[in-house]
Image 1 (tube, rainbow, N blue to C red):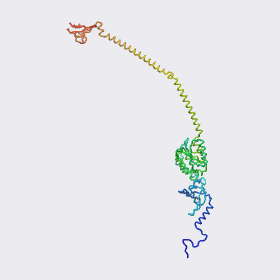
Image 2 (cartoon, rainbow, N blue to C red; image 1 turned 90 degrees about the horizontal axis):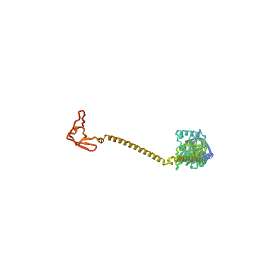
Image 3 (cartoon, rainbow, N blue to C red; image 1 turned 120 degrees about the vertical axis):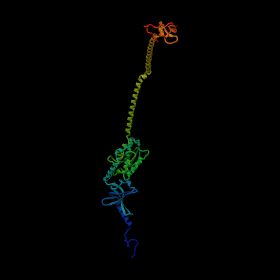
Length: 421
């Protein structure tokens, strides 16, 4: 019996094929028949590889289909899938020969209905609201007259034209820096968030950031409900106004922004003051200022006229004359008072002199009286005992003196009291 190498059977049928050949046939057959296929299912086991590719599964109650989204395709998707999301995907079936597996290569992805998206939206809204990101007290006012505006939007959309036309018609002094970004599709939220961070780093700094986009479905606007963008708006160092979709379209970015415009046009209206209103206000201020100045000038003229008519101006010497008259009157009164005082003192002095003259010893001497004193000195003699016999005495007369020697001293009569010194 002849042995054959390996585990190969001794006799191979002529129609036998290798694994590669069979796999190639399967690949040709499947890829040709499933080159354009729509698949609906729930996303499961989603993994974003470091290369940027997304690997996931689509499942229903009975089966699981492996799928892949290549990195270059991600920006074109209407929505980026997430675990648990019901999606409708378009693509083609491709076979991977090294593993003998097949997968769906997705080139389009849409949410299947809005129920799942709305559930995710409500859950994220609850989380962010609990953190206080929607609180009114954290919102900042927009500058009244912005000079530099950072505009984040798609450069090819209609929203940019509406925004700029309205803005420049109202406030042509503004300087607008366009930061282009995708506003729809997978990865748009991250791109918009990066643009917001870039706007916050501009130098010189901008006064306000406008984040605008035209209308669309919930799926079209989904990027503005994704957490990375919402948190980037909340963290922006510059006030942010959102003008997304139509009035009925309310996204999480609208709620977290410092100001919400109902549309891109309304956002431009809220940012920019109306130039004509400003000019009218300036004209009104100019008129009021002119009237106020004229009124102040008239009041000042009246005060000057009153001052010019007062005596201090018309008769500048009158106060001096009045003061001089008062001084003259005062001097006259003082002089009269002095004369009266001198006269009174003179009269008093004359009266005192008269009294002194009446009591003066000289007056007594003039009337024939005399004063006798001892020649040796001493006071007037008042008693005979003060001038013993033989003593010399001096008698003062009205005219001259007499020097005498006592020859005899007589005592007074008994009935006459003796005066002693």
